[in-house]
Amino acid sequence: MKYLKFILPLVIFSLSVSAQTTIRQDAAIKQMVDEVSSKNIEAIVRKLVSFKSRHTLSDTTSKTEGSGAARNWIKAEYERYAKESGGRMTVQFDTFTQAKSARVLTPTRLKNVLATLKGTDPNDTRIYIVSGHYDSRITDVMNANAEEPGANDDASGTAVSMELARVMAKRSFPATIVFMAVVGEEQGLDGSANVAKRAKNEKWNIDAMLNNDIVGNTHGMDNDLKDNMHVRVFTEGIPSIAAGNERTINSLITNGGEDDSPSRELGRYIKETSERYVDQLDVKLIYRRDRFLRGGDHTSFQKEGFTAVRFTEMNEDFTRQHQNIRTENGINYGDLPDFVDYNYVQKVARMNLSVLANLALAPASPQNVIVLTSGLTNNTDLKWDDPKEGKKPAGYYVLMRETTSPYWERKTFVSGNSVKLDYSKDNYFFAVQAVDAEGHESLPIYPKPGR
Ligand SMILES: [Zn+2]
Image 1 (cartoon, protein in one colour):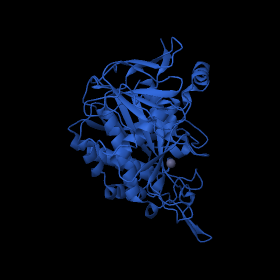
Image 2 (cartoon, helix red, strand yellow; image 1 turned 30 degrees about the vertical axis):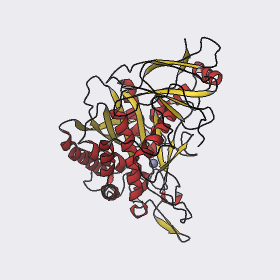
Image 3 (cartoon, rainbow, N blue to C red; image 1 turned 90 degrees about the horizontal axis):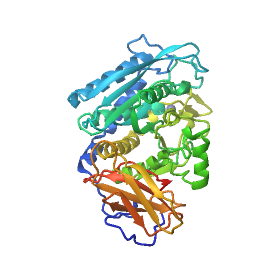
Image 4 (tube, protein in one colour; image 1 turned 120 degrees about the vertical axis):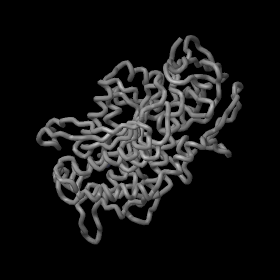
């Protein structure tokens, strides 16, 4: 990474993300990160696989097999974790009728499982969501009751959600955290679409949604390329909700900022925060909504206007996804639990935890962040309002980077609600985040031009 070769005049506290030698950690967050256990994660994945099929349209009457038994077990596990929360964690099925669609041939009652850890600040309505999908599939997406282990896709992501609920239920945060296991992903993102639409209708104040899907395999298809260091975080550039919105699109064309969507800001935040807490991790930000030919539950939330990202392993092994279990030409196909690297899922879970905890402990983001464009000048005037809810921040970080850099390169502490920088607004990108006395940062807000 390149660093800006100057000192900002207003620097009180400044650091370059990757240039830090002493990493500032919150001991309480580090403790939670350390409690995330690969053994628990493995037990969850193997238990989910034991239901034989978790296909969305599989049997719901058996106590031991099929989607019904699986969702009941997930709910009971969340309820077990909730006992440690002093009544703050509640568990519910989010039940809905999926209308007839290409992959659901008759209207079908489906159930997501949601565990909600209520925030402790009554004046803070922020919600953070971590999610995995518990349904599975094989080669034929309509074959519901075969052997469909779905260990990596996506018992691994479901296990991330569940293990985080276990660790975090014992702790309190000013903001609310929802641990989700959704159904119907393989049939068309059905479960996540239902939660996202409900959230929109009920005006949930979702600040960030983290989707974990296929987070457990560490080797590529040639088997000798092992990578347990990198985790991909997919972010969208132009927000999904900007589609068809001529004003937003025209503003992006005129002013730039297509790499500063809320999803991209969340991606950068994830890289900085999780590398602060998780050893031997190099987060790979992918500036793309998802992989080619694939989709995921984050997109259901993006389409409703929420900030969301997808976590996925670095090298996918497509012989292990969406495949009938079989051996063909000496190749073993099938998404089996023996091929999941549980230490790697643990790493991904720890990333998610550090981000959720840091966000849920932080003040809310500043409001009305404006870069003044009333005159032609070679400097930058930024102003903003305090967060509209929750605790008052100790101050703000003004972030700065070269327009061609993917990462923030300068971080300047400001105690008031405005700053004047002797660097041209035309030549750099800026954002502002709120920070509390312990150093927990809100998501950064990219300024709008204004007066
Ligand atoms: Zn999946």
